[in-house]
Image (cartoon, rainbow, N blue to C red; front, side, top):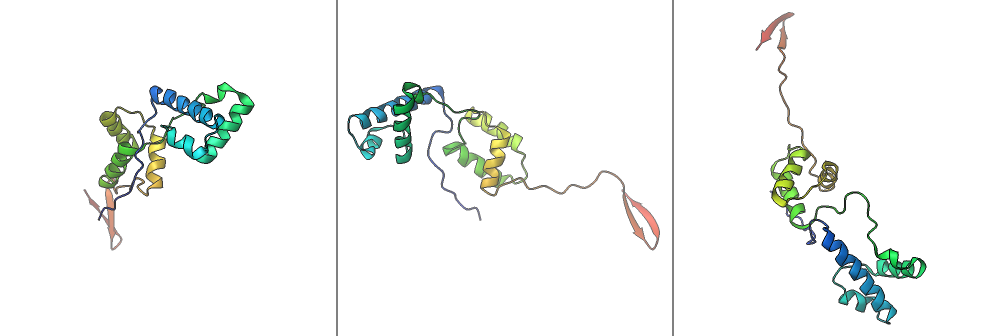
Length: 155
C-alpha cells in the first residue's frame, strides 16, 4: 500500500521576480523593526516567511554591512523541488521503482518546464527512501550448466 507524505506548499522554483520580492520583503522587515515593531509583527506584515532568528541575523548584518545585505547571495542550484514538483517526483518514483534519475529529470522538465539536476533528484529520492531499485537482467552470453562433469550449452 502506498503511503502519503506531506509536502511543503511553496513555489517549485525561485524565479527572478521572486528574488526581487524576497529582497523587498527583507527590506520591509528591517524597516518595520527599525520603526519599533516586534519580530512577530514584522513577520505577520511580511509576504515572505522568515524565521525569527533569521530576522535578527538580518538586522545585525544590515547594521554592520549596510544595504548590500539585501542582495541574494545563493550559489549553485537555487532551491530544492517543493510543492507539486516534489509530489510528482515522489509519486513517479514510487510507481516506477527502477527508473533512472535522468528519466525523472526529463519528466519534470516536460511537465513543469523546470531544470532540476540529477544529483538533486538523487538526494530527494534517497531522503524519501526511493532510491533506484536495480532490475535483474539475464546475461546475453551463453549459459553453461554442468551436469555430471559434462557441460551442455543452453541457449
